[in-house]
Image 1 (tube, helix red, strand yellow):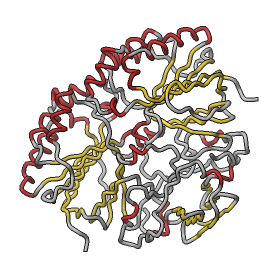
Image 2 (image 1 turned 90 degrees about the vertical axis):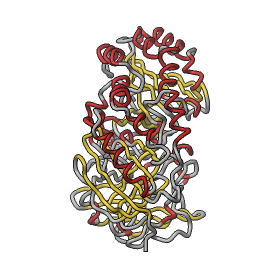
Image 3 (image 1 turned 135 degrees about the horizontal axis):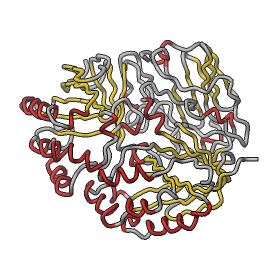
Image 4 (image 1 turned 90 degrees about the horizontal axis):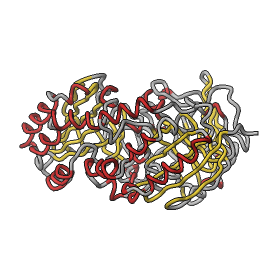
Length: 262
Length: 262
């Protein structure tokens, strides 16, 4: 795994100068070739500091991507994609990790939530997982509206507890028809029904990643105040006992506390 | 746009030797750093030829990707992703292109269908678009089974005509609830119902790409025998008149004939 900043490739564009650094300090400087002219080239923000060991360069956020030329990426997608970096930086300190099903992720001290698509691991990172928010897959109009009206925003000051629960469902789940999945998800497991009971106490965001080639199908993210910690345990416990959960073949439960790194 | 092979970065792994070539012939040779040890690094097949102008290296297919380190990519995804390269090579010769809605794609002579994810444009290519096959989004069990039983495989010898129709739907479509989209898609537009009538004459495959950050939401691919060309026109015409199509904001209709490049 990459733990040193020299161990991944990066590209800096500043005016007409390119800097390409790969591996142990090898650098190539050259003018941008004409093919870059009509392409969107992702870049580090000029003047951003190289990440030292043990820190993630926060300027990676948003537009600043590693090793990716994305000529056709739509703006709307860039606002939907997020990268979760497990390592030793980030405002979210890991308080507990449990591999509920399937192989664990490497144990980390902190998680950095990056708005945008990081294509390579920043220094200090042990793993990264990515996902995109997307359209509803199982809602009726009524459910859709209830969710929209009751869901609080992320980042509430009092919501100092969080959970990142990456989930993978089995191939047999994905081979079902849409109506069968809806039947299991809502009619028989009450996923939306149950979730609505815990709104607005538990803020949530669902990231999809199966079609991105990621190891998980979903990254589920929850934020809540310490006073609602028991309610969150209850919610998780009810869902894990549902018929839907028989199709979950990998699940990691990572609990977090918001705490600025010292 | 990239038209010369020197104009994109590539990485070759052969035993313990790395070759990195960026821009105008700049190359760096070094041993793999330790961080590669636990990663899957995508590579050109050893011994594959560099693509010359006007040809796409067919060894790109499957495992051979450009500029992408994918440590966590699942095998099942690699079988689901495809890249369509518009350029001057490939067995599919473009016979007609029409921008039905929204901005056109650059006009090309041929399309190469690559099984796998090409992250950069091969030489001779003017554009590339990617998508993944995925789970059904709107089927009932009965529809799902009818589709499975009637759908022919791609690549039938007699199906020498094809169409690649990339489509983007509007944000208002994606903001609908699942049940509303099903209502428009099938109950009111009969997308599945109409499609089933043309099976097995018209073989089809649907690639999803909205969540991949691609410029299109879907790449629709059809293959049929010349004798069924009128049937295909009828199918396309019926769908374009449907309520569902009011949500299509970009659509390019590319017609193809299978013909080995000379």
